[in-house]
Length: 92
Image (cartoon, rainbow, N blue to C red; front, side, top):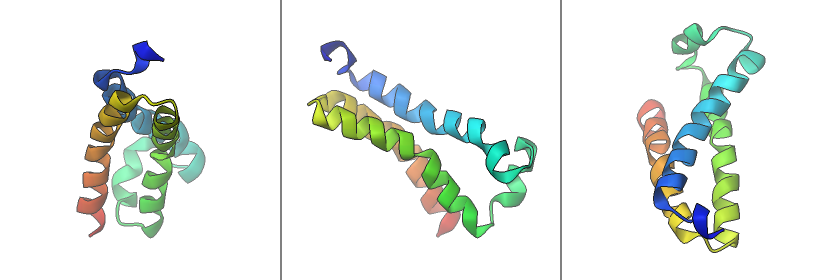
């Protein structure tokens, strides 16, 4: 666990994982190509979908917290910050 307890690893994983989850599940959930995301931005269900894409990050952060990898957690929170800012910007 000591080699995973780095800030940059948490930052990288928690920044990339929601994007990969979004790309992997978008066509299965919405049945539209990725080029049509812009038309879905104002749909009420899109916010819940973006929160769903952040769920794997929360699992990683919970795992890191339980294994006392606090540097990984710091990087993970920094990696989640752009997505949370995007949610606040789009939906407030």
